[in-house]
Image (cartoon, rainbow, N blue to C red):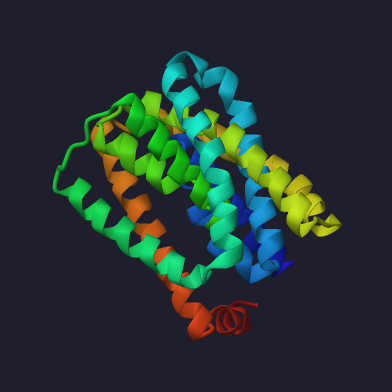
Length: 253
């Protein structure tokens, strides 16, 4: 019963965050889902529910979508995905996560101090490639996309719409890759099915929150999520050396 309540709270908060900002589900949900499920189960549940959110919202946000940017990001990600698989299979993934976490925290710091980025088609492709690489290597496509769009001062409606539409492509590809290389099981699909009503409630609340957020608050949310992304990756690397998840399970379960 307690596990069920914890699961509901995780999914509800993460769905509200994803719906209102266009990002953040993975950062909010994954660390806590790892307390309840095996790593491969937590990742696939996260991907499935993120896809569901994007599917439900895409019709409503289509008018705000930057189609040209979306195409360039998606094409770039197709080239990045294979390199991510190579990294995942050939190098020490914890070392890679450590490097990514430090870079993410440094770049977020630059954004906070108002360092701007000029958008170009070439940079769109590169950011899409990096996002695709991170999807198949560590399961986190959002940070490079969010850093780039925040640095170019993209308006919040366009940022949310383009990010959610991009997730349809990149998470769909990632789910197929996960199933082919890691398989799947009934726990993943049953848990995802149970979570759908909670996701729908989160969608409704998230839409209200989005209307309440002005551009300044939206940017603040962005910096917080980026910082949490970097800290989560750093935490994940540290817990590989000094296991923290088993201790948390003992405390909370």
